[in-house]
Length: 598
Image (cartoon, rainbow, N blue to C red):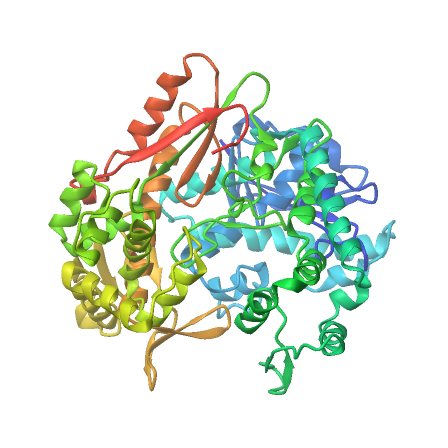
């Protein structure tokens, strides 16, 4: 199978660029134009093909027998499938590889080249592209510059791939799957339903704004809105600006003082609702983006960012965050399976809580999971010193749920109190600080192995600072330089880990991050849980089409023939424990429908 390394050069200007538009909008726009393409076949010399030669060069390649290498393959691969109708056998993305091997560090080609070849100045990205900005037709001299620039990019991409291609095959397969979700999507939109939803959200917001009797400009401006509040006899709350240190209006939707003001003056609900309608157009904006992202025949590219998080979790990208679609929301229901197929949606139940109990050796909690007990009610029963059940004690059970899901990584009493009051996972519950501290103490004394794990993992990370400790093992983790190696061949990297006056710190995304036992534990548990989920995705993709993943959820398109059997197979697969945690009790649940309704 041939290895094709490729890079397209395309027209852009001040308004028309990937900084202004999503990949989907940019590539489908009437202004989109390919200036040319650089192509390297295996280890041969890279060739430049200009505007008039590009299509012939692309179509001359035997794509079903090609492994494609690009830097940001979601862009170049998308052009291949959309404009030239070709699909490579396998997608490789050196930007994605960089994120996997160097999480928290820049994955731009320029920075990857420096990281891969720190002492070779010849391996550097050029700057000539800026000379062609806003130029529709390249003259021979400018095309020669862009051709040279493109060839250098292709050669850098190829060299970086050769340097980093020892990445575990399972991760390479995930990168291929991620690219395929975008370049060869398996989901569609229900355009009629989505259009109706967008119009309803827009009209509802307009109705609320008009009903307030306040000018839109006043509602949208912090300063003018604060002045309006003064005029009606209210004193707007303030906060210190993080940049200037001066007092500024605290009128954001997450500002506690503003929330308190709204609670104190319910007679002005029409004003608060109008302010929200102006400032929060998320549902309208997202519906519009889904409409503009879908192809003319309603196929929906799924832009996921491989290894977006330090722990390997996927993230959203291209302004279409499909990792954040509210359950049961209309936006989810506007995403559908193609033709007569169905969407099968399944998620691992309490995977982080199960993994935490397993690594901490909390046998009692593991047995409760294994027996299928309601662990939220069980812990709530300990807190309230009486039997709690889901049907009769929803508030008490919610306290138990918040504790099980929130206290495993070192959360303190104040944050636990605030979490209960926010009601993010259930009804708002208002505890005193003393009551919250009692629950925290009860959790830590009931599951003593978990606080012990925080201390063990903090010590384990400290061991990565000393060469004599390399190779030490704790469970599925192995100590190496500034990193904890994971059982799938990847690692939790802590770049430039060191001691400071604050404790352990490391560099991530151009800033210094402080870490400690609870946070290290959260990193480890999320990374291990992610491996279980992605291993199942890779197994399931051999028989079905994995179309999307959202946190602990896998979304698959498959035939409508005998759907119950298909669902059972998916659930069974997701509950297969890994070899390195063969005794962890896993559980999953799911359902199927034409639309993404779970």
